[in-house]
Image (tube, rainbow, N blue to C red; front, side):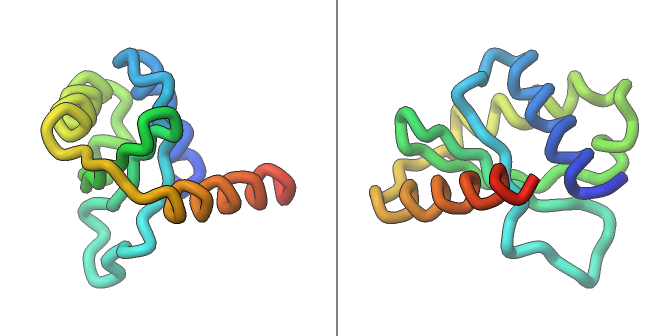
Amino acid sequence: MSSRMQQQTLKQILLEQGFDAWSVFDSAEQQSDTDSQSSWVLFNFRTRREAKVAIPNAWLCDRRRDQATGQLISVTIDNASYPVPLFKVRKLRRRTQSRAVAA
């Protein structure tokens, strides 16, 4: 499954879990030596909070595991999200706007 499809799947799971204010970005810290999991950055522009999560690729390819993926995301947001400085918010906004223009 492509990174874009995985990102769309994660966005759908976020919506189903009630985290509609959160956005999903692929992490720049992807590990190329292992294909067993992918790293994602979850970001809330309203509250300026960020969370990083690694999700097994098998979970993203199997829609029957959406419940487990949603629980992992929920726990990550509730327990491991942290505030970020304003300059990082601006940087992420530019990144999302440039992708929207390119699409």
